View 1 (cartoon, one colour):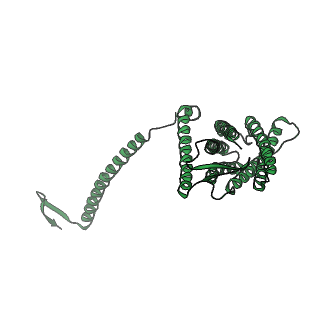
View 2 (cartoon, helix red, strand yellow):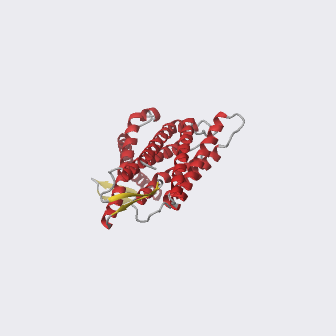
Length: 319
């Protein structure tokens, strides 16, 4: 893959993820009233079909280039990419058949299961993508595991509870695809342009098998640190973008009529509790004193004892 291929793949992932995040609101609002789980969007399936087909074509081209260059590692790597792309292509084909075919109907959990296997195989590909243990590109591939893991978890949630959490799972998968797309763009510019780390250079073995070598040990550590810093910037950008979009379009999806200020509620609750405590204490004390006086008076009358007091001092009892 080159700069154009990775940029096109990254832009496609961003668009698919944005669409998944957009339709997640409608899924969450309609899942409570629908007993059947919603199917995947036609736009998502068509986009996945087209992107998977392009990945297959690119992998076949890289495979033939690796065979001509006698690169066995590159050949095996492209076979793995072909397997993953074929799974995504199968998922999209079966999903499109559910929409356009009146005789064939594949269950929704089956499509989710195929999608889950696709993400899991992609996760293993980037996790075991160690062509060169000393290459800087391995740090970028390790950070790619984060958005793929988000997609895996979201698909598992949708697989086991499709009707209750379909909106949240689509939103999580959409955000994971957006982060995956932005990181694809970053890898393309970091690998194939002058934005690569200082004192590091790209070396090809075949079209799909390359490594980034640095001159010294400190240069290697600096290149890895730059990769982590860039990924943190991508995460911060994604969080800021989500918060901004939610602030602008939140009124369409959130009912603010039932919102009550937390400060006023706490203040009213504190005042009511304080007045209740003071009133109850004074009432209890007064009632206790009255009850004690009544009990003493009754006991004295029963015993025939009359108590005489003078000016509140001293007392004389007469039998």
